Length: 467
Image 1 (cartoon, rainbow, N blue to C red):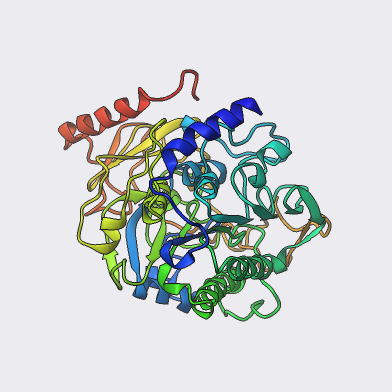
Image 2 (image 1 turned 90 degrees about the vertical axis):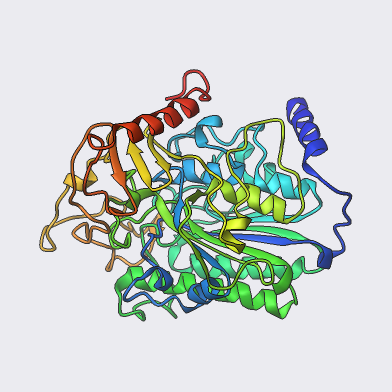
């Protein structure tokens, strides 16, 4: 407790840049981050999906900015959520692998989450949805800067699936078909309850992570399968959030981000990229990023400059006129110039991390794989539609309640499966070869060496013993 107080006090000194009155809502910037789970780079209408209907998210992009080379720091849940919440690569906090209900670790007290940064500045804060940074009491969002929490503490396919309000279990078994609806209602209630003061809302949806589910109003309505139903309801949720902001007169001073934690699982779409969730090919780590802030972000802006999930931390704090912590390495940069102008990426290199080590380096148009990208062998698992297959994460009628039919078959591989194979040091030109088909490392040894230097530089900052 003493260590936590000392850490918080030290950070507080450096986090608030100006004296603020939290009751004057109009003079502050509210921030909302909507974080989908396993939503692919090609799963939205504005990113080219031919079937999924996402008019609200598409409108958000039309009224704001959309990035087409935006990255997670990992192709799975816990590491990417750690990076989002801390603005730091996950190896800096030790959460490099996916946590499960048997895990005894979680987000460290020494980390400064977005919730803590905003709360210390006088903001009301809420985390609604998936946390996945530790399920034990000491790791609960309410002990890491969030005034309130409502959601599932890890993935919705991990047993037991339990819904929490703060540190109290309030529903078991969970009716998964109601999750998007309930999370949306809780978010709207939070917005309305805090309309007179600044707020930060982290809305981390369960969908379209498996098992897929949608409420009665959306179930079997998309004509694009259960995945399409879930995405349609996710889009509805975004529309409801914007409606609440407009109804309460908060639309003009609220910055809203929409993104995903990693690439898609079976049934999703990468938008023509190689790989899927669980791999560090583009399909596993490139995700949508849409930002809207009327009057501050250019409407209809599209940028192909590389950026990544840690940037939301820094950009959100700067937008709220809060200083960036100076007592630790913050990997995220302010990407507001990308969203509002024709600025170039603030990053010399962006890295992905998987299975305990750095896997890729992205710099400009180049991407270097420093180790095998397909860690789990997902590209090698070829299924035909007629093949018998039982999803090990299927609904079991007790701990997971979701539609039994409609769960995506692995024959519906979301990304490109072809391309050169390699074990390490494979170079791809993503401008001419976004699907990572042709390894050109032998042709451009000087580029390989440049990217290797970026890799060695970040590797040197890893804590001792990191794997």
